[in-house]
Image (cartoon, rainbow, N blue to C red; front, top):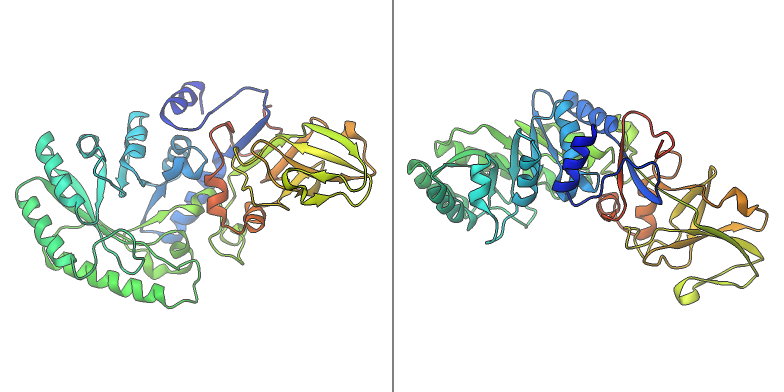
Length: 399
């Protein structure tokens, strides 16, 4: 990526992007991994299209950079939760088909319609979108969302006939065009559960209803990453690639490499300090950890303000090829590792400390330490951690 694109991304995204060789902490994103993941999934689901989901600033990886890489690799759609996310990408030059689906009364529907952004519709928003289309004198493109069992957004099957009738009236008036139908799977990451079969059956019924109503659909889509990888019968015309886009597995007991996916993010910092302490030394707030012997403590300058889960005591940090668990509570800006009694501080101060990624432990290890999922770990890495983009090699960050 050239410097001009990096400057543009800084203006249009929440994250800080840097090419500076100096760094205190950094999330290194391998864009070749993003492209690999798209290609692997595109081959798997062909002839279905691939939507690259870049909500939450590309799951913390950088929405603009990920969107560009995904489109280069064969994705033909970009997915965002919020219209504001989609508009930022449009302004940054992303001109592919794009869908946004989570709205409030303050959503800028007028701008979205003029920017050619498709809009998901779940209920009340149908009327608001039609009114916006009338104001800007441009028909909206909408995808009807159906609640097939997740219980969040989407029209229920009981409400769907009425929704379709209203949509047809608006389409006849030239205010919108219904181009898609979609839903979302609730438990596809647990392939043995029967609810996915139930949801897919309801989705088929919804498709029959919308087609019987006379709408000329372009896309039918329900598959998220776990659906993509475990349920070929969910692929339909298009799949929505979220977690898998970033090289992470949605399955508790299956690693990404089983699906030829490559994790794209490496989170690193440098050891800020090392000091010798006596046996019984308390560590961090609450003094819940005390050293069992005279030892050296290493200070890691990342904490919950950088996105490390505060509850993830025991989270792994790798220095000089060896992994050390975090001891004591993770603080706002820092955490501590116990290096043991037989170390030379000069071998550690200033050395790379890998929180997760190539050369260290996986995102999943941090997720387990925090009692959460890998989705949350990567999306919570905060904007004060600069993103640095590489192609095909992690190398030494900053070089």
